[in-house]
Amino acid sequence: MALVIDCVAIGDEIMKEIVQETEALKAKGITPGIATLLVGDDFGARMYRGQVEKFCQEAGFNYINENPPADVTEEEVINIVKKLNEDPAVSGILPLRPFPSHISDSAVINSIDVNKDIDCFHPFNMGKLALGEPTFPPATPSAVIEILERYAREVEKVDPKDFFEGAEIVVVGHSNIVGKPTAFLALNRNATTTVTHVFTSMKGNLVKHTAGADILIVAAGKPDLIGPDHVKEGAIVVDVGINRVKVLDADGNPVLNEKGKPKTKTVGDVSFDAVKDKTKAITPVPGGVGSVTNRMLMKNALKACKIQHGLL
Ligand code: NAD
Image (cartoon, rainbow, N blue to C red; front, side):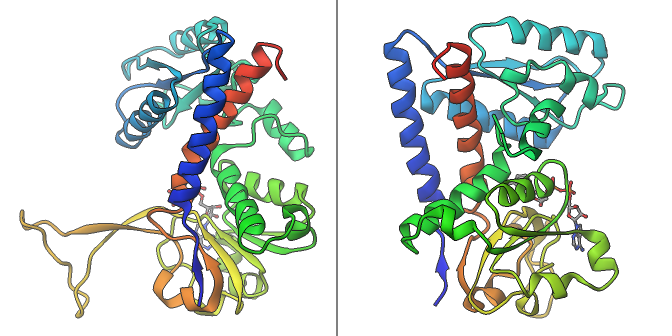
């Protein structure tokens, strides 16, 4: 019987640890803070902004909302970043993308102080990650590793070091935000790490790799990409994907809501019901990696705050 890893409980546990650390810092007269930078009003970015604000309130962090209109110039956005770099109330800066097309992602990211780059966007911090010396390991990949480390300690009762060393880890997805940094974090723990992506699938080679994984980490953004044939018996599966799909009835027709529109639900990249019993442990969607991601961002903000105050 597979264990469905309770990522919500893990997220709650980490939040308690963050609150305790924040209280200890406040006792020294220091308050950690996060500034988000949203340019315009992209829907997904706005949702994410709201979540960050809520978590900052829960943890007792400062929260600064920078939200210039979509027609702001690139120079003005960079000036906002420079102001945040100098602001002692801001420990970490989080650019929320996508930016409007006239604003270069890299121009904005390169202007962030590397000691305030809490989601590891800056090439300096990505380089440190690749060298195995991450200062701010990016939030989603860190959430994946944190879930696996806690699983190792609490369920398998093994040292996470032994859990990772030599484990066959296959990552599906090679984006700069999720797939690649997840692979670096696994490699930094001496796992035998394979990275697969859309071109692996196009050559018909995805199953060949995923079916050999002790730990399969999937971040492709493709519902039902991973079925039972892709998974080794007794593997641990971490599903990072978040997809909105239509709810279908038994005949495959969309189920409508009270307004006559198709009902939707959130699913991952793994066909959870079909795969679950083949695994030793699996993360669900919703209630999976996403429940831990924001907490990892806040842990990085705490770390940034300590670095800036000479406490680390
Ligand atoms: P992305 O679109 O930038 O990258 C997708 C990756 O998947 C690419 O490397 C691509 O080559 C690969 N891919 C696409 N189709 C594939 C196929 N058929 N076979 C194998 N590989 C394939 O996406 P991203 O930003 O890396 O996000 C990936 C998923 O993770 C999305 O569903 C996103 O919503 C989700 N996500 C979740 C969290 C979280 O906290 N849980 C955070 C960030 C992203």
